[in-house]
Image (cartoon, rainbow, N blue to C red; front, side, top):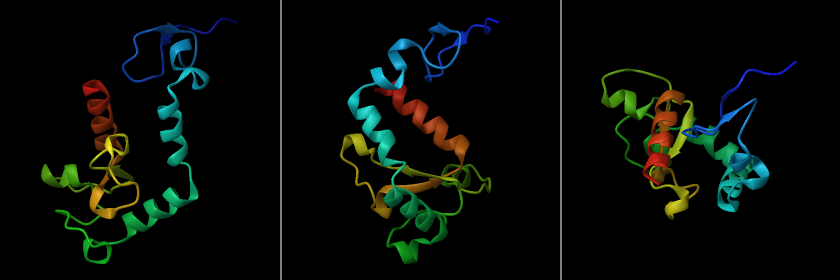
Length: 124
């Protein structure tokens, strides 16, 4: 049985495929820095930092965000209250931002984090 065609799973790629990613975006053909970035977010060090960051407040972490880490900062700026599920680097790691510095991170909900990530990829 042949699967229905759909766009490549890589955000912003218009290539039509039967499943997953197109040849240009499969794991083996991705740029080394993209693969390395993905590995970082699966490390125990990052996972522990992420849990700690989302569970602490600014006074404990030594930063000065507009809202508690457990709440999405972008939603807070729009007058909404949404739980933060993701930790976003303010200055991207690829641009020299610190990996585990709470002053370079902000809590975001999954929706806001996805939006910011897509906007950054489109700018690049």
